[in-house]
Image 1 (spheres, rainbow, N blue to C red):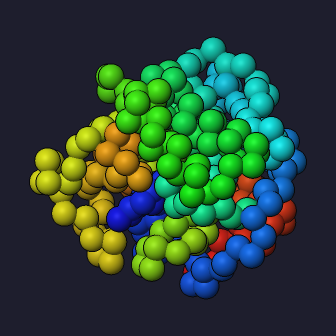
Image 2: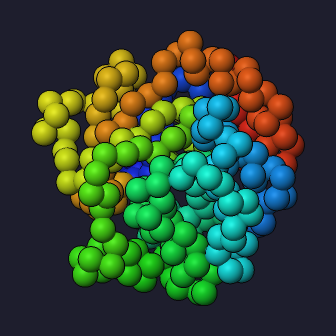
Length: 250
C-alpha cells in the first residue's frame, strides 16, 4: 500500500520480516468458500480478544456476496476481504481479515461488501474498479465524517506487500485510523517500504483513492509476538486449509 496496497489494502505489508520469499501467481480466479467456522475465527482474529464476543461477523458466499453470520452489539463488524478492487485484478488467494467500527461499517466496509456482490454478479475487475471510483465521485460512497479505526491485528494476511508489491503471506498486525484525503506530506511522514524502521511510526496509506486513506500504526514487536503465539492454532488451521496461507519458517 504505494503501499490493500500503495495500493492499496492494507498497506499491506510493510514489513520485512516474515514475508514469504516466493510470491505466487494466482492462475485460478474463482473464489473457494471457506469453512464457516474457520472463516469466522479468521475474521475475528483481526480484533483484540476482549472485543470479539460482541462483534458482528459476515461470511462470504462467493456466488452471492457477504452474508450475515452473527449479529453483534458493539458496532464492530468483521469479515475476511477476498477482492481488492483497487488492483483491477481478480485472484482467489487474497485473504485480508479486518474489522471496522460503527462509522467504518457504514462507509469503508460497505465498499468491500458491495465489491464482493458485484464480483459475484459477474462484473469484470476493470469495470469494478471504474464503478467504485464512480461511486465515490457521485457521492454514493462517502468517507467517514468523524474519527475512527479499522482493527487489523490478525496474525496473518495474504495480499500485496513489499519488497516487490506482489502477493505475499505475511504477519503484519496493525491499526488503520481514518484519514481521508490526508497524505504523508500532511503529517511529515516518510515511509520507505525497504526500510522497516521507517514504518514503526504512523504513516499514510492510500488504498486506491484519496478518500480511502488511513494512518497506519504497526503493532509493537512484543505484542506482535504475543499475537502470533496466542493464535498458533488458527495459523495451523489456516495452513492446513490452504498452503498459500502458511507462513514461511524463519
